[in-house]
Amino acid sequence: MNQFVFSSLDLSVIPQRKTAIIGTAATITSLIPEGLALLTSVALALGVIKLSRMNVLTQELSAIETLARVDVLCLDKTGTITEGQMNVEQVLYYAEEKPEVDKIMSFIIALDEEQNASMEALKKYFDTSQKSNFELETYHPFSSETKYQSIELKGGSTYNLGAFDLVAKELTTKQNADIEKALDEGYRILALSQSKPSEKDSLVCLILLKYRPKKEAKRILEYFEKQGTKIKIISVDHPKTVSLIAKEVGLEADYVGLSELPDDEKEFKKIVEEKTIFGRITPERKRDIIASLKSNGHTVGMIGDGINDILALKKSDCPIALGSGNEATKSVAQFILLKNDFSVLPDILKEGRKVINNITRVASMNLLRVIYTFTLTVLLLITHHLFPLESINLMMMGIFTVGIPSALLVLEKDEKRNEEDILQKIRNNALPTGIIIGVAIFAMLALAYKFPIYTSFTNGHVVTHYKEFISDVTLIIGSVQLFSLYLLCRPLSRFRAIVITGMTALFYGTYFIEPVTKFLGIAPFTSFRFLIPTSICILLILIIRADVILKS
View 1 (cartoon, rainbow, N blue to C red):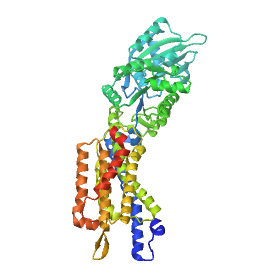
View 2 (view 1 turned 90 degrees about the vertical axis):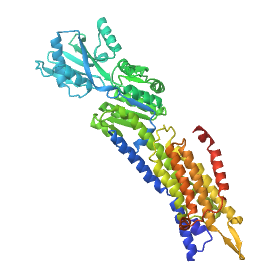
View 3 (view 1 turned 60 degrees about the vertical axis):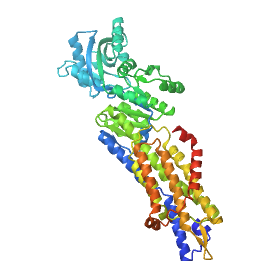
View 4 (view 1 turned 120 degrees about the horizontal axis):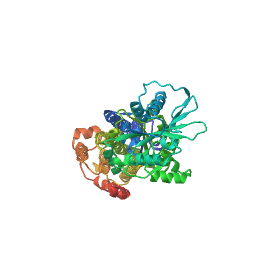
Protein backbone atom coordinates (compact mmCIF):
# COMPACT_ATOMS: atom_id res chain seq x y z
CA MET A 1 0.00 0.00 0.00
CA ASN A 2 2.76 2.43 0.97
CA GLN A 3 4.88 1.59 -2.09
CA PHE A 4 2.04 1.92 -4.58
CA VAL A 5 -0.35 4.51 -3.10
CA PHE A 6 1.25 6.77 -0.50
CA SER A 7 4.75 7.13 -1.97
CA SER A 8 5.74 9.71 -4.56
CA LEU A 9 6.61 7.06 -7.16
CA ASP A 10 5.25 7.47 -10.65
CA LEU A 11 4.05 3.96 -11.47
CA SER A 12 3.79 4.76 -15.16
CA VAL A 13 7.59 4.88 -15.24
CA ILE A 14 8.97 1.33 -15.47
CA PRO A 15 12.03 1.80 -13.16
CA GLN A 16 9.86 3.37 -10.46
CA ARG A 17 7.22 0.67 -10.83
CA LYS A 18 10.00 -1.90 -10.48
CA THR A 19 11.18 -0.21 -7.28
CA ALA A 20 7.65 -0.40 -5.85
CA ILE A 21 7.31 -4.10 -6.68
CA ILE A 22 10.72 -5.02 -5.28
CA GLY A 23 10.08 -3.09 -2.05
CA THR A 24 6.68 -4.71 -1.64
CA ALA A 25 8.11 -8.18 -2.26
CA ALA A 26 10.90 -7.58 0.25
CA THR A 27 8.38 -6.46 2.88
CA ILE A 28 6.06 -9.44 2.37
CA THR A 29 8.84 -12.06 2.36
CA SER A 30 10.38 -10.52 5.48
CA LEU A 31 7.05 -10.79 7.27
CA ILE A 32 6.96 -14.57 6.71
CA PRO A 33 9.11 -16.68 9.09
CA GLU A 34 9.61 -19.30 6.40
CA GLY A 35 12.14 -21.34 8.36
CA LEU A 36 10.06 -21.58 11.51
CA ALA A 37 7.52 -24.16 10.34
CA LEU A 38 10.25 -26.37 8.87
CA LEU A 39 12.57 -26.25 11.89
CA THR A 40 9.70 -26.74 14.35
CA SER A 41 8.50 -29.78 12.42
CA VAL A 42 12.05 -31.15 12.26
CA ALA A 43 12.56 -30.68 16.02
CA LEU A 44 9.26 -32.39 16.86
CA ALA A 45 9.89 -35.21 14.37
CA LEU A 46 13.35 -35.85 15.81
CA GLY A 47 11.81 -35.93 19.28
CA VAL A 48 9.23 -38.50 18.15
CA ILE A 49 11.95 -40.66 16.55
CA LYS A 50 14.06 -40.60 19.72
CA LEU A 51 11.03 -41.45 21.86
CA SER A 52 10.22 -44.38 19.55
CA ARG A 53 13.71 -45.76 20.23
CA MET A 54 12.72 -45.79 23.92
CA ASN A 55 9.61 -47.84 22.96
CA VAL A 56 7.35 -44.83 23.44
CA LEU A 57 4.64 -44.21 20.85
CA THR A 58 3.79 -40.53 20.39
CA GLN A 59 0.23 -40.09 19.11
CA GLU A 60 0.23 -36.28 18.96
CA LEU A 61 3.23 -34.14 17.94
CA SER A 62 2.01 -31.15 19.94
CA ALA A 63 1.98 -33.28 23.11
CA ILE A 64 5.75 -32.92 23.41
CA GLU A 65 5.29 -29.25 24.29
CA THR A 66 2.86 -30.13 27.10
CA LEU A 67 5.11 -32.92 28.33
CA ALA A 68 7.97 -30.45 28.81
CA ARG A 69 5.85 -28.35 31.19
CA VAL A 70 4.38 -31.14 33.36
CA ASP A 71 4.93 -30.30 37.04
CA VAL A 72 2.57 -32.89 38.59
CA LEU A 73 2.63 -36.55 37.57
CA CYS A 74 -0.27 -38.73 38.70
CA LEU A 75 0.06 -42.50 38.66
CA ASP A 76 -1.30 -45.73 40.02
CA LYS A 77 1.16 -47.85 41.96
CA THR A 78 0.61 -50.92 39.74
CA GLY A 79 3.08 -51.10 36.89
CA THR A 80 4.81 -47.91 37.98
CA ILE A 81 6.36 -48.15 41.45
CA THR A 82 5.54 -51.87 41.65
CA GLU A 83 5.82 -54.81 39.28
CA GLY A 84 2.71 -55.43 37.24
CA GLN A 85 2.14 -58.82 38.85
CA MET A 86 1.23 -59.71 42.42
CA ASN A 87 1.24 -62.94 44.39
CA VAL A 88 -1.10 -64.42 46.98
CA GLU A 89 1.12 -64.58 50.05
CA GLN A 90 -1.33 -66.03 52.55
CA VAL A 91 -5.00 -66.94 53.06
CA LEU A 92 -6.54 -66.59 56.53
CA TYR A 93 -9.60 -68.86 57.02
CA TYR A 94 -12.35 -68.01 59.54
CA ALA A 95 -15.35 -70.13 58.62
CA GLU A 96 -16.22 -73.49 57.14
CA GLU A 97 -13.63 -76.02 56.09
CA LYS A 98 -10.63 -74.88 54.10
CA PRO A 99 -11.37 -77.19 51.08
CA GLU A 100 -14.93 -75.86 50.91
CA VAL A 101 -13.72 -72.24 50.94
CA ASP A 102 -11.19 -73.02 48.23
CA LYS A 103 -13.96 -74.51 46.09
CA ILE A 104 -16.06 -71.34 46.50
CA MET A 105 -13.07 -69.20 45.57
CA SER A 106 -12.32 -71.36 42.52
CA PHE A 107 -15.96 -71.14 41.42
CA ILE A 108 -16.02 -67.33 41.66
CA ILE A 109 -12.67 -66.95 39.92
CA ALA A 110 -13.80 -69.19 37.04
CA LEU A 111 -16.77 -66.88 36.45
CA ASP A 112 -14.63 -63.72 36.44
CA GLU A 113 -13.57 -62.38 33.06
CA GLU A 114 -11.45 -59.50 34.39
CA GLN A 115 -7.77 -59.53 33.38
CA ASN A 116 -6.39 -57.49 36.28
CA ALA A 117 -3.37 -58.31 38.43
CA SER A 118 -5.44 -59.39 41.45
CA MET A 119 -7.46 -61.91 39.50
CA GLU A 120 -4.37 -63.29 37.78
CA ALA A 121 -2.79 -63.87 41.21
CA LEU A 122 -5.94 -65.60 42.48
CA LYS A 123 -6.06 -67.84 39.40
CA LYS A 124 -2.49 -68.95 40.08
CA TYR A 125 -3.19 -69.72 43.74
CA PHE A 126 -6.59 -71.40 43.53
CA ASP A 127 -7.22 -74.39 41.30
CA THR A 128 -9.95 -73.30 38.88
CA SER A 129 -9.88 -76.58 36.96
CA GLN A 130 -11.62 -78.60 39.67
CA LYS A 131 -15.30 -79.26 39.16
CA SER A 132 -17.84 -77.97 41.65
CA ASN A 133 -21.41 -78.95 42.41
CA PHE A 134 -22.58 -75.35 43.10
CA GLU A 135 -25.71 -74.20 41.32
CA LEU A 136 -25.53 -70.53 40.37
CA GLU A 137 -28.58 -68.33 40.79
CA THR A 138 -27.09 -64.89 39.87
CA TYR A 139 -23.64 -63.47 39.30
CA HIS A 140 -22.66 -59.83 39.66
CA PRO A 141 -19.22 -59.12 38.14
CA PHE A 142 -16.65 -56.81 39.71
CA SER A 143 -17.59 -53.14 39.64
CA SER A 144 -15.28 -50.18 40.18
CA GLU A 145 -18.11 -48.53 42.09
CA THR A 146 -18.69 -51.30 44.64
CA LYS A 147 -15.12 -52.72 44.55
CA TYR A 148 -16.39 -56.31 44.80
CA GLN A 149 -18.18 -59.09 42.91
CA SER A 150 -20.80 -61.47 44.20
CA ILE A 151 -22.54 -64.76 43.50
CA GLU A 152 -25.87 -66.03 44.76
CA LEU A 153 -26.23 -69.81 44.95
CA LYS A 154 -29.38 -71.81 44.90
CA GLY A 155 -30.32 -72.31 48.48
CA GLY A 156 -29.92 -68.64 49.43
CA SER A 157 -26.21 -68.26 50.22
CA THR A 158 -24.52 -65.15 48.78
CA TYR A 159 -20.74 -64.72 48.61
CA ASN A 160 -19.01 -61.36 48.10
CA LEU A 161 -15.37 -61.14 47.03
CA GLY A 162 -13.56 -57.81 47.00
CA ALA A 163 -11.98 -55.01 49.04
CA PHE A 164 -11.94 -56.06 52.69
CA ASP A 165 -13.21 -52.74 54.08
CA LEU A 166 -16.25 -52.86 51.79
CA VAL A 167 -17.02 -56.58 52.03
CA ALA A 168 -16.23 -57.42 55.65
CA LYS A 169 -18.88 -55.62 57.69
CA GLU A 170 -19.02 -57.54 60.98
CA LEU A 171 -15.53 -58.36 62.33
CA THR A 172 -14.30 -60.07 65.45
CA THR A 173 -11.43 -58.74 67.54
CA LYS A 174 -9.07 -61.32 66.04
CA GLN A 175 -10.12 -60.46 62.49
CA ASN A 176 -9.55 -56.76 63.13
CA ALA A 177 -6.13 -57.53 64.55
CA ASP A 178 -5.25 -59.68 61.51
CA ILE A 179 -6.27 -56.87 59.16
CA GLU A 180 -4.26 -54.24 61.03
CA LYS A 181 -1.20 -56.47 61.03
CA ALA A 182 -1.54 -57.16 57.29
CA LEU A 183 -1.91 -53.45 56.54
CA ASP A 184 1.17 -52.64 58.60
CA GLU A 185 3.10 -55.17 56.53
CA GLY A 186 1.94 -53.59 53.24
CA TYR A 187 -0.37 -56.35 52.01
CA ARG A 188 -3.27 -55.78 49.68
CA ILE A 189 -6.25 -57.45 51.35
CA LEU A 190 -9.21 -59.10 49.66
CA ALA A 191 -12.04 -60.59 51.64
CA LEU A 192 -14.64 -63.28 50.99
CA SER A 193 -17.83 -62.87 52.99
CA GLN A 194 -20.99 -64.99 53.19
CA SER A 195 -24.53 -63.92 53.85
CA LYS A 196 -27.64 -66.04 54.33
CA PRO A 197 -31.27 -65.03 54.65
CA SER A 198 -32.08 -63.73 58.12
CA GLU A 199 -28.43 -64.06 59.17
CA LYS A 200 -25.64 -61.53 59.60
CA ASP A 201 -22.79 -61.38 57.10
CA SER A 202 -19.80 -63.42 58.18
CA LEU A 203 -16.19 -63.19 57.08
CA VAL A 204 -15.10 -66.43 55.42
CA CYS A 205 -11.46 -65.62 54.64
CA LEU A 206 -8.92 -62.91 54.00
CA ILE A 207 -6.56 -63.17 51.02
CA LEU A 208 -3.26 -61.33 51.47
CA LEU A 209 -1.57 -60.27 48.24
CA LYS A 210 1.59 -58.34 47.69
CA TYR A 211 3.24 -56.37 44.92
CA ARG A 212 6.99 -56.29 44.53
CA PRO A 213 8.40 -52.73 44.30
CA LYS A 214 10.36 -52.04 41.13
CA LYS A 215 14.10 -51.80 41.66
CA GLU A 216 14.38 -48.59 39.63
CA ALA A 217 11.31 -46.91 41.19
CA LYS A 218 13.28 -45.16 43.95
CA ARG A 219 15.77 -43.67 41.47
CA ILE A 220 12.96 -42.44 39.20
CA LEU A 221 10.99 -40.83 42.01
CA GLU A 222 14.16 -39.12 43.29
CA TYR A 223 14.77 -37.75 39.79
CA PHE A 224 11.29 -36.22 39.59
CA GLU A 225 11.71 -34.72 43.07
CA LYS A 226 14.98 -33.04 41.99
CA GLN A 227 13.28 -31.73 38.86
CA GLY A 228 10.50 -30.12 40.91
CA THR A 229 7.84 -32.48 39.53
CA LYS A 230 5.35 -33.56 42.20
CA ILE A 231 4.21 -37.17 42.32
CA LYS A 232 0.61 -38.09 43.20
CA ILE A 233 -0.31 -41.76 43.63
CA ILE A 234 -4.00 -42.43 43.00
CA SER A 235 -5.07 -46.02 43.66
CA VAL A 236 -8.10 -48.20 44.20
CA ASP A 237 -6.25 -49.97 47.03
CA HIS A 238 -6.41 -49.09 50.71
CA PRO A 239 -4.44 -45.86 51.30
CA LYS A 240 -2.35 -47.38 54.09
CA THR A 241 -1.29 -50.28 51.85
CA VAL A 242 -0.28 -47.86 49.10
CA SER A 243 1.62 -45.63 51.52
CA LEU A 244 3.69 -48.56 52.83
CA ILE A 245 4.61 -49.67 49.31
CA ALA A 246 5.51 -46.06 48.46
CA LYS A 247 7.67 -45.93 51.57
CA GLU A 248 9.64 -48.94 50.33
CA VAL A 249 10.68 -46.91 47.26
CA GLY A 250 11.58 -43.80 49.26
CA LEU A 251 8.30 -41.89 49.02
CA GLU A 252 7.14 -41.07 52.54
CA ALA A 253 4.02 -38.97 52.27
CA ASP A 254 0.61 -38.26 53.74
CA TYR A 255 -2.29 -40.37 52.52
CA VAL A 256 -6.04 -39.98 52.41
CA GLY A 257 -8.94 -42.31 51.60
CA LEU A 258 -12.03 -41.71 49.52
CA SER A 259 -14.27 -41.40 52.58
CA GLU A 260 -12.06 -38.61 53.96
CA LEU A 261 -12.29 -36.42 50.87
CA PRO A 262 -14.62 -33.45 51.48
CA ASP A 263 -17.52 -32.47 49.24
CA ASP A 264 -16.69 -28.78 49.57
CA GLU A 265 -14.77 -27.76 46.43
CA LYS A 266 -12.42 -25.35 48.20
CA GLU A 267 -11.45 -27.87 50.87
CA PHE A 268 -11.14 -30.59 48.25
CA LYS A 269 -8.64 -28.50 46.25
CA LYS A 270 -6.63 -27.86 49.41
CA ILE A 271 -6.40 -31.56 50.32
CA VAL A 272 -5.54 -32.53 46.74
CA GLU A 273 -2.66 -30.06 46.83
CA GLU A 274 -1.38 -31.18 50.23
CA LYS A 275 -1.74 -34.97 50.05
CA THR A 276 0.38 -37.26 47.90
CA ILE A 277 -1.34 -40.65 48.20
CA PHE A 278 -5.04 -41.24 47.54
CA GLY A 279 -6.65 -44.62 48.22
CA ARG A 280 -9.93 -46.33 47.36
CA ILE A 281 -10.52 -43.71 44.66
CA THR A 282 -13.36 -44.16 42.17
CA PRO A 283 -12.94 -43.19 38.47
CA GLU A 284 -15.08 -40.07 38.96
CA ARG A 285 -13.11 -38.95 42.01
CA LYS A 286 -9.85 -39.62 40.16
CA ARG A 287 -11.04 -37.26 37.44
CA ASP A 288 -11.97 -34.67 40.09
CA ILE A 289 -8.46 -34.87 41.58
CA ILE A 290 -6.91 -34.17 38.16
CA ALA A 291 -9.33 -31.28 37.57
CA SER A 292 -8.50 -29.74 40.96
CA LEU A 293 -4.76 -29.95 40.32
CA LYS A 294 -5.25 -28.18 36.99
CA SER A 295 -7.40 -25.47 38.59
CA ASN A 296 -4.58 -24.98 41.13
CA GLY A 297 -2.36 -23.94 38.22
CA HIS A 298 -0.50 -27.20 37.57
CA THR A 299 0.26 -28.90 34.27
CA VAL A 300 -0.79 -32.46 35.02
CA GLY A 301 0.50 -35.69 33.49
CA MET A 302 -1.43 -38.91 34.12
CA ILE A 303 -0.37 -42.54 33.66
CA GLY A 304 -3.08 -45.19 33.38
CA ASP A 305 -3.84 -48.57 31.88
CA GLY A 306 -7.43 -49.50 32.65
CA ILE A 307 -10.92 -48.41 31.66
CA ASN A 308 -11.24 -46.86 35.12
CA ASP A 309 -8.49 -44.41 34.19
CA ILE A 310 -10.13 -43.05 31.01
CA LEU A 311 -11.97 -40.16 32.70
CA ALA A 312 -8.82 -39.00 34.49
CA LEU A 313 -6.63 -39.43 31.40
CA LYS A 314 -8.98 -37.33 29.27
CA LYS A 315 -9.01 -34.62 31.94
CA SER A 316 -5.21 -34.46 32.29
CA ASP A 317 -2.96 -32.22 30.20
CA CYS A 318 -0.65 -35.08 29.20
CA PRO A 319 -2.25 -38.56 29.26
CA ILE A 320 0.19 -41.49 29.13
CA ALA A 321 -0.99 -45.10 28.74
CA LEU A 322 0.79 -48.39 29.34
CA GLY A 323 1.14 -50.68 26.33
CA SER A 324 -0.60 -53.51 28.17
CA GLY A 325 -3.58 -51.27 28.88
CA ASN A 326 -7.07 -51.38 27.47
CA GLU A 327 -7.48 -50.28 23.82
CA ALA A 328 -9.96 -47.58 24.82
CA THR A 329 -7.44 -46.24 27.33
CA LYS A 330 -4.66 -46.14 24.74
CA SER A 331 -6.92 -44.33 22.27
CA VAL A 332 -7.19 -41.26 24.56
CA ALA A 333 -3.48 -41.17 25.44
CA GLN A 334 -0.92 -38.88 23.84
CA PHE A 335 1.95 -41.24 24.70
CA ILE A 336 1.97 -45.03 25.02
CA LEU A 337 4.72 -46.89 26.91
CA LEU A 338 4.83 -49.90 24.60
CA LYS A 339 6.84 -52.09 27.00
CA ASN A 340 5.18 -50.80 30.20
CA ASP A 341 8.61 -49.51 31.20
CA PHE A 342 8.14 -46.82 33.83
CA SER A 343 11.91 -46.23 33.91
CA VAL A 344 11.80 -44.39 30.55
CA LEU A 345 9.74 -41.53 32.02
CA PRO A 346 12.77 -39.40 32.99
CA ASP A 347 14.13 -39.80 29.44
CA ILE A 348 10.75 -38.88 27.98
CA LEU A 349 10.65 -35.75 30.14
CA LYS A 350 14.21 -34.81 29.13
CA GLU A 351 13.42 -35.26 25.44
CA GLY A 352 10.29 -33.14 25.72
CA ARG A 353 12.20 -30.34 27.45
CA LYS A 354 15.01 -30.50 24.92
CA VAL A 355 12.64 -30.21 21.96
CA ILE A 356 10.66 -27.32 23.42
CA ASN A 357 13.70 -25.37 24.60
CA ASN A 358 15.21 -25.64 21.12
CA ILE A 359 11.94 -24.67 19.41
CA THR A 360 11.63 -21.65 21.71
CA ARG A 361 15.12 -20.50 20.80
CA VAL A 362 14.59 -21.08 17.07
CA ALA A 363 11.17 -19.40 17.08
CA SER A 364 12.57 -16.32 18.82
CA MET A 365 15.26 -15.92 16.15
CA ASN A 366 12.87 -16.42 13.24
CA LEU A 367 10.19 -14.08 14.57
CA LEU A 368 12.73 -11.33 15.24
CA ARG A 369 12.86 -10.44 11.53
CA VAL A 370 9.06 -10.40 11.33
CA ILE A 371 8.84 -7.93 14.22
CA TYR A 372 11.49 -5.48 13.00
CA THR A 373 10.06 -5.58 9.46
CA PHE A 374 6.56 -4.91 10.77
CA THR A 375 7.82 -2.06 12.99
CA LEU A 376 9.73 -0.49 10.12
CA THR A 377 6.78 -0.89 7.73
CA VAL A 378 4.41 0.90 10.13
CA LEU A 379 6.86 3.80 10.57
CA LEU A 380 7.38 4.07 6.80
CA LEU A 381 3.62 4.02 6.25
CA ILE A 382 3.23 6.99 8.59
CA THR A 383 6.04 8.99 6.90
CA HIS A 384 5.33 7.78 3.32
CA HIS A 385 8.93 6.64 2.84
CA LEU A 386 9.87 3.68 0.65
CA PHE A 387 10.99 0.36 2.10
CA PRO A 388 14.80 0.69 1.84
CA LEU A 389 15.82 -2.95 1.53
CA GLU A 390 15.57 -5.70 -1.06
CA SER A 391 15.21 -9.39 -0.31
CA ILE A 392 18.68 -10.15 -1.65
CA ASN A 393 20.24 -7.62 0.75
CA LEU A 394 18.92 -9.66 3.67
CA MET A 395 19.84 -13.09 2.32
CA MET A 396 23.34 -13.57 3.71
CA MET A 397 22.41 -11.96 7.00
CA GLY A 398 19.44 -14.31 7.32
CA ILE A 399 21.59 -17.34 6.54
CA PHE A 400 24.34 -16.64 9.08
CA THR A 401 22.36 -15.07 11.92
CA VAL A 402 19.11 -17.06 11.73
CA GLY A 403 19.10 -19.94 9.25
CA ILE A 404 22.24 -21.95 10.05
CA PRO A 405 22.24 -21.20 13.83
CA SER A 406 18.59 -22.29 14.06
CA ALA A 407 19.27 -25.50 12.14
CA LEU A 408 22.21 -26.34 14.43
CA LEU A 409 20.64 -25.28 17.73
CA VAL A 410 17.49 -27.32 17.07
CA LEU A 411 19.71 -30.37 17.63
CA GLU A 412 21.14 -29.03 20.92
CA LYS A 413 20.79 -30.94 24.18
CA ASP A 414 19.00 -28.59 26.56
CA GLU A 415 17.04 -30.39 29.27
CA LYS A 416 16.39 -27.40 31.53
CA ARG A 417 12.85 -27.14 32.83
CA ASN A 418 10.85 -24.49 30.99
CA GLU A 419 8.46 -23.00 33.54
CA GLU A 420 7.43 -20.00 31.42
CA ASP A 421 4.73 -20.28 28.79
CA ILE A 422 6.38 -20.88 25.41
CA LEU A 423 4.52 -18.06 23.61
CA GLN A 424 5.23 -15.63 26.42
CA LYS A 425 8.92 -16.54 26.37
CA ILE A 426 9.14 -16.08 22.59
CA ARG A 427 7.39 -12.73 22.90
CA ASN A 428 9.73 -11.58 25.67
CA ASN A 429 12.77 -12.63 23.65
CA ALA A 430 11.80 -11.30 20.22
CA LEU A 431 9.45 -8.35 20.70
CA PRO A 432 11.70 -5.75 22.41
CA THR A 433 14.69 -6.55 20.19
CA GLY A 434 12.59 -6.51 17.01
CA ILE A 435 11.04 -3.13 17.81
CA ILE A 436 14.45 -1.64 18.66
CA ILE A 437 15.95 -2.85 15.35
CA GLY A 438 12.96 -1.51 13.37
CA VAL A 439 13.18 1.92 15.02
CA ALA A 440 16.99 1.98 14.50
CA ILE A 441 16.67 1.32 10.74
CA PHE A 442 13.99 4.00 10.44
CA ALA A 443 16.16 6.49 12.37
CA MET A 444 19.09 5.77 10.04
CA LEU A 445 16.85 6.32 7.02
CA ALA A 446 15.54 9.62 8.43
CA LEU A 447 19.06 10.83 9.24
CA ALA A 448 20.26 9.88 5.75
CA TYR A 449 17.54 12.08 4.24
CA LYS A 450 18.48 15.10 6.38
CA PHE A 451 22.26 14.83 6.65
CA PRO A 452 24.92 14.00 4.04
CA ILE A 453 25.98 10.78 5.76
CA TYR A 454 25.81 8.65 2.62
CA THR A 455 26.35 11.37 -0.01
CA SER A 456 29.42 13.06 -1.46
CA PHE A 457 30.06 15.98 -3.83
CA THR A 458 32.05 14.77 -6.84
CA ASN A 459 32.79 16.79 -10.03
CA GLY A 460 30.02 19.20 -9.25
CA HIS A 461 27.48 16.44 -8.65
CA VAL A 462 25.93 15.01 -5.50
CA VAL A 463 26.57 11.25 -5.41
CA THR A 464 24.45 9.01 -3.16
CA HIS A 465 26.25 5.95 -1.81
CA TYR A 466 23.12 3.85 -1.39
CA LYS A 467 25.01 0.55 -1.16
CA GLU A 468 26.95 1.85 1.84
CA PHE A 469 23.66 2.66 3.55
CA ILE A 470 22.35 -0.86 2.82
CA SER A 471 25.63 -2.31 4.04
CA ASP A 472 25.41 -0.43 7.35
CA VAL A 473 21.76 -1.40 7.81
CA THR A 474 22.49 -5.10 7.30
CA LEU A 475 25.53 -4.87 9.59
CA ILE A 476 23.39 -3.35 12.35
CA ILE A 477 20.62 -5.94 11.95
CA GLY A 478 23.09 -8.82 11.78
CA SER A 479 25.13 -7.61 14.76
CA VAL A 480 22.06 -7.14 16.96
CA GLN A 481 20.69 -10.54 15.90
CA LEU A 482 24.00 -12.18 16.79
CA PHE A 483 23.85 -10.48 20.19
CA SER A 484 20.27 -11.75 20.61
CA LEU A 485 21.48 -15.21 19.67
CA TYR A 486 24.10 -14.94 22.42
CA LEU A 487 21.42 -13.96 24.96
CA LEU A 488 19.20 -16.87 23.90
CA CYS A 489 22.09 -19.34 24.19
CA ARG A 490 23.17 -18.43 27.71
CA PRO A 491 24.57 -20.17 29.66
CA LEU A 492 27.01 -20.98 26.89
CA SER A 493 27.95 -24.58 26.29
CA ARG A 494 30.90 -25.53 24.11
CA PHE A 495 28.58 -26.32 21.21
CA ARG A 496 26.71 -23.01 21.50
CA ALA A 497 29.93 -21.03 21.74
CA ILE A 498 31.24 -22.70 18.57
CA VAL A 499 27.98 -21.93 16.72
CA ILE A 500 27.97 -18.24 17.74
CA THR A 501 31.69 -17.74 17.05
CA GLY A 502 31.48 -19.49 13.69
CA MET A 503 28.41 -17.58 12.53
CA THR A 504 29.92 -14.25 13.64
CA ALA A 505 33.10 -14.93 11.66
CA LEU A 506 31.17 -16.00 8.55
CA PHE A 507 28.76 -13.06 8.74
CA TYR A 508 31.41 -10.34 8.99
CA GLY A 509 33.70 -12.23 6.59
CA THR A 510 31.21 -11.85 3.72
CA TYR A 511 31.70 -8.06 3.77
CA PHE A 512 35.34 -8.53 2.76
CA ILE A 513 34.56 -10.71 -0.26
CA GLU A 514 33.83 -8.37 -3.16
CA PRO A 515 32.02 -10.88 -5.46
CA VAL A 516 29.68 -11.73 -2.60
CA THR A 517 28.93 -8.10 -1.68
CA LYS A 518 28.34 -7.28 -5.33
CA PHE A 519 25.86 -10.15 -5.63
CA LEU A 520 24.05 -9.04 -2.46
CA GLY A 521 23.84 -5.42 -3.57
CA ILE A 522 25.84 -4.11 -0.60
CA ALA A 523 29.14 -2.26 -0.30
CA PRO A 524 32.31 -3.97 0.96
CA PHE A 525 33.40 -3.22 4.53
CA THR A 526 34.85 0.32 4.54
CA SER A 527 34.06 1.90 7.91
CA PHE A 528 33.01 1.22 11.51
CA ARG A 529 30.14 3.70 11.25
CA PHE A 530 27.60 0.95 12.04
CA LEU A 531 29.06 0.41 15.53
CA ILE A 532 27.39 3.53 16.97
CA PRO A 533 23.75 2.56 16.21
CA THR A 534 24.59 -1.09 16.96
CA SER A 535 25.91 -0.15 20.42
CA ILE A 536 22.83 1.97 21.11
CA CYS A 537 20.53 -0.91 20.13
CA ILE A 538 22.42 -3.38 22.35
CA LEU A 539 22.37 -0.93 25.27
CA LEU A 540 18.59 -0.47 24.93
CA ILE A 541 18.09 -4.25 24.81
CA LEU A 542 20.17 -4.66 27.98
CA ILE A 543 18.15 -1.96 29.76
CA ILE A 544 14.73 -3.29 28.69
CA ARG A 545 15.57 -6.94 29.40
CA ALA A 546 17.77 -6.33 32.46
CA ASP A 547 15.58 -8.38 34.83
CA VAL A 548 15.49 -11.40 32.50
CA ILE A 549 19.22 -11.21 31.77
CA LEU A 550 20.16 -10.98 35.46
CA LYS A 551 17.94 -13.97 36.34
CA SER A 552 19.57 -16.16 33.69
